[in-house]
Image: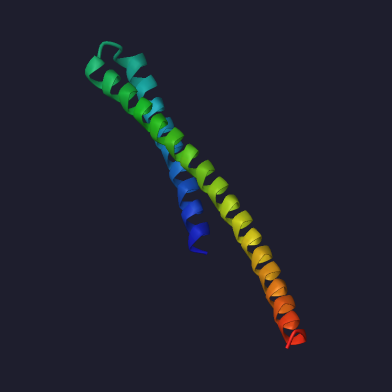
Length: 102
């Protein structure tokens, strides 16, 4: 459950980043239209959009890596269960053979 909450939080964070980026972009377009010479606003806002997108891409990569890691973990757990079952069967066969040789 905690894992799903974390994944949900990552998705929400990505959505929030895109929402904030869109708000800044709308404001930036208004400033460019109404006050195109206000580089003191335009440049930092443009830089902020670039940084937000960079954060978004990092979160996107982390989300994908998390899913891959969870799948890999699940696969390994399944293999471990199979190996444990094989071990238990071999142990049982061995014990039976030991009884026969007594």
